Image 1 (cartoon, one colour):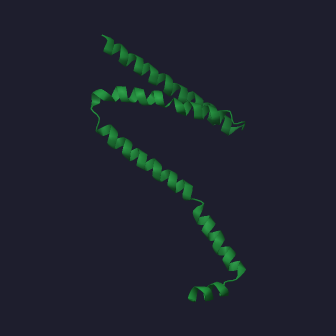
Image 2 (cartoon, one colour):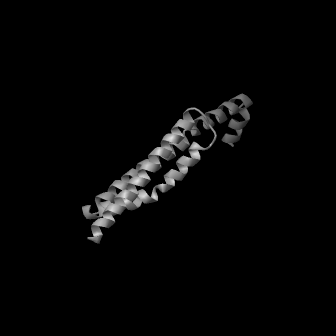
Image 3 (cartoon, rainbow, N blue to C red):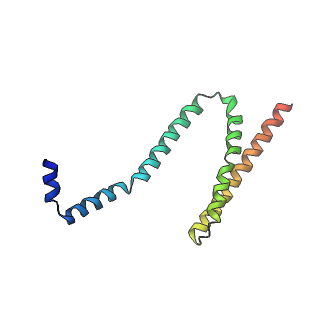
Length: 118
């Protein structure tokens, strides 16, 4: 009964201010969620890599670099979205860096496989 009385006493302006406050507080929620996921991924990655013997680091990294070709697809999509200026430059830079990463991954894999053939 108390909440009904409180609702009746609330004016439209006060209710609007409360809604605006709630919306303003939830604006940063995607950023907080993204940072939380990033920190969990960093922690999980460090824990997993620290448990792997050093002799397996090269095969693991070459495999993950090959899989990271997905970042090249994302970079191409960003670069080709039609935006100009800074977005186009950052998209081009992302394509270059992702290409270097993929090529480096394949070179490391090739070199590692050559060592196993001997």
